[in-house]
Length: 375
Image 1 (cartoon, one colour):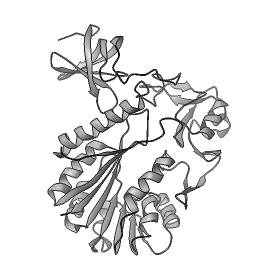
Image 2 (cartoon, one colour):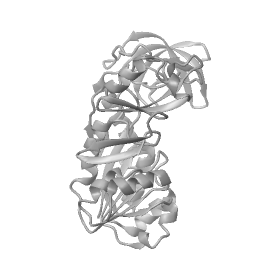
Image 3 (spheres, helix red, strand yellow):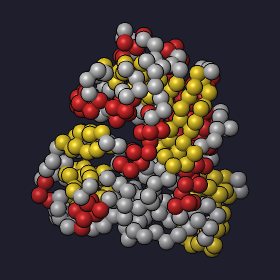
Image 4 (cartoon, helix red, strand yellow):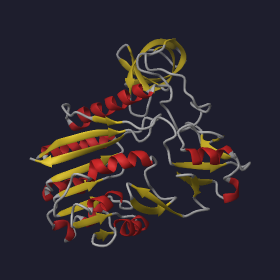
């Protein structure tokens, strides 16, 4: 086996979760940041554990077909993007491979066809977190480091945020060392200077805290919402992990009885306003809610948008017992989603549709949506 510091010749096979490329050395997986499928590399071994090695690129003997020159001057140093060295087509192919592999390995499902919903490759991100260094300069975090990197441009930001960071010291006046900024239409809204943001999604007004969570690619939000909500109707629906009510606001049109569940009290407060009167709201964890009288009702459609860890065992058990006619699952992690998908299929559901929504081009982050139908 190659030792630390040794340089080896390596062919990269595919992108793995986290964005590294993977090749094999005598059958052993070797993970290489900033590598591309098809690359023939001279790779320097920098570490590893039993069962795998880590390496860095010492030289590219022959680039893979999807390798391109990254447009950002900070790429590789900044802690944000990790796939700018791939063409957008290669990025989508890599992400589709990640999702398919996860569903096969973690869900036991290898015959699911995924649609791919592409984004604008650049100038898409409406929301970003910034830091302010000791000199008052606006920064991102450096890759794999607690140190900061001054930035004056970022090609994935929407134009109002790109304009704002070009100042370089605009964050210094906020008196904070970390803050969130949100670009909407022609304005930059800054945590600490502005608090509440009002936006429009498909003709529906929404408000939320700038420092709270909301999806960072509004154009893709307007493609995800119809996939989740537009062709569904019935008597009763539930929006679990509802956040500020993004899906609930649109589900309400097709379901006269709707319940929205969210444990963050500030978010559920915004959900009450965004969804409006006529719906039921529960400021509780999913675990607590499943023990409530409300959870014993029969639901025609349940939408879940859980955190990265996916559904808890309690949530999965409730879905299996409640047996809604349809389940819509929005996910930010293909592995936990695949695990839950496998559970739902065993509980009697069929995968009616599945899609990869590329909310975050130039990164290895994957968002997915699947609809399950009770057989």
